[in-house]
Image (cartoon, rainbow, N blue to C red; front, side, top):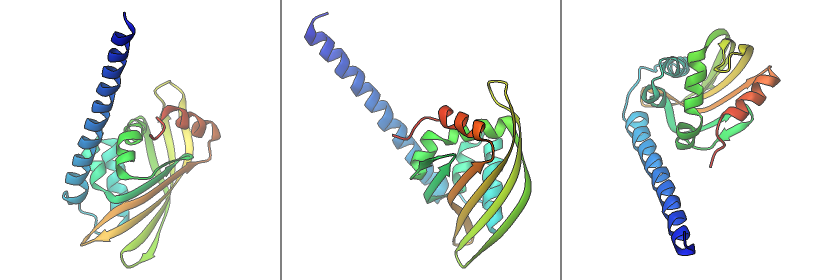
Length: 180
């Protein structure tokens, strides 16, 4: 293959990859716009948004999970961050769905507070199950959720998860793709 042909092939491959990435971002943005902004969920109290989000993950319902998230979402998850709802939808939401399906999150404690439109929901879960590689999951996971009232609905604007299991945390960081 000539040098020019190699350059054209490489250029076409990069263009194709860029086109696929742009299409994926456009689809995610459209999905988020439809479901986050326009899709109403019954979230009359702050904990409803958190519990609804977890239930949607367990059902493998991507659109349902996104419908509980505010447009300004920021996620801190086991040492990494998703600074936008689009980043979370494209990078880590699929991993969170897989983990929700493979595990059971039993609520141990919960505190809710805040005033006005801004509230917080602090939850502790006992998480058990089996990872895709066959290893058991048995840990305590802490979750901080900040929710914001928009009209008569609460939406999650921030999630922060951590665990007491350092080995799981290291494994989770290696399983998820790094943000762009």
